[in-house]
Every structure is written in C-alpha cells, then in structure tokens.
Image 1: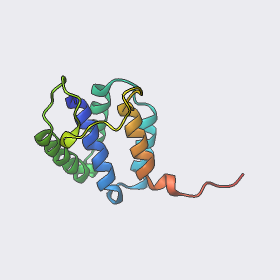
Image 2: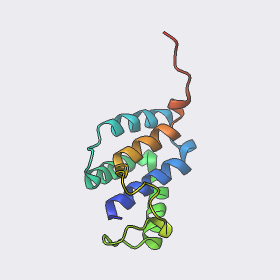
Image 3: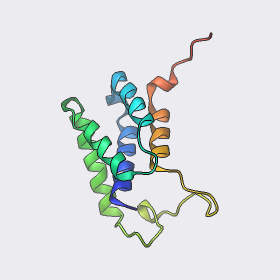
Image 4: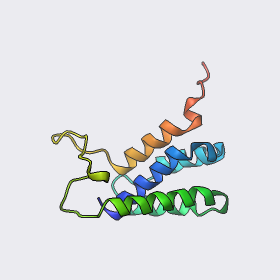
Length: 124
C-alpha cells in the first residue's frame, strides 16, 4: 500500500470514528469535495484531504487523522511488492475483479457516515 493510500485510509477511519464531531456544513463540503476528486490520483486526493483538515476548526479531526496515520504506518510497512493489507489482511476483492479506487472508498465512507444521507428525502 502506498503512502497516499495509507493517508486516504487514515482519513476514512477518522470519518468513521469522529462522525459526531463533524458539523453538517462540513459534511456538505465533504460531499462536494468528494464529487470533484480525481479518479485515479491517490497523491492528489491525499493532498486535498489534508488541506481540508488544516482549517483551525477541524484541529481535533486533524489530530485523529494523524493518530490513525501513525498507527497504520506503524503496523503496515509499505512494500509495493506484497499484496497484503492493514494488519496483514488479504484483499476481500476477488482476483478477477478490480479493487475499488480510493475515490470510491472515500465516496462510500462519506455517504455511509454522513448524517445528511440519513435524512428522509422529500416526496415530489
């Protein structure tokens, strides 16, 4: 796993563990941000996420993200020649199917954890 993929996983873990600390306005911003992320550029996605976290009001989220990143890099050495995930886990994606992109994983995490997606949709 690359450094950038690890960074994105750390961000997703932060979303999952700190859902209650993210205001609705930030969820809205995250959803917009997610829809504009590049499809296959983990480096750029990682930089965009870290920039989003640098706002002073998100300091607690940034601290959680950094802690996640530290624990992920401590337990998962980066070795591009080995297909083993975090905690020596194997991919759950069948070998004949492509793995979901980092953008797709991030989109799903935002949709799954966002309180905005839990609101009932108005009937037309």
